[in-house]
Length: 233
Image (tube, rainbow, N blue to C red; front, side, top):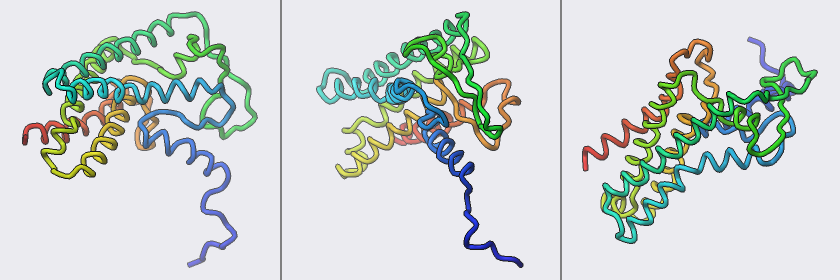
């Protein structure tokens, strides 16, 4: 058996660039935080805001619960309702952008191995920016269904991640902090892939996903985990 020469890199320059672009997108559920070409900073800022939006909405409900303004189940309903409204706004903003006559301008590239087309953007809230960040759904039914699912997931997630409940369950403040932080990161990943943009899965042919099943996979895992724990409590 011939051994690989130590001078031969495991990943060449193209593969390294591809990995650096694809790996964060897959782990975080869709945000494209590294593109292979120059884009305005607001492209990245908008993605970060959209990614953290569930945490912000859940944080409002959590704060009201901690201040004894709302009971736990009202907190879940409140945060879930806010997420449902935001999800509807995001989805219908994408639908509105699709009806605009402005098209995303593609830049010519000499790299025949480029994974994605290069685009130019005119403004932070322009139709071309919205269509790039939020591709939208193929069917109106999925637009409504995924928005409702996003609200339900945020509500149950907020209920599950209430600090007082976590502390009573595990009895360790340090564990509460870690579970709260990583729990909300997980929820943000599920929400982003559901209502904003789903990452390209290497094991799935995107053209065969006619019913948009891929965006439901991460939320499904979250629902299974949260529902079992809530039922146990």
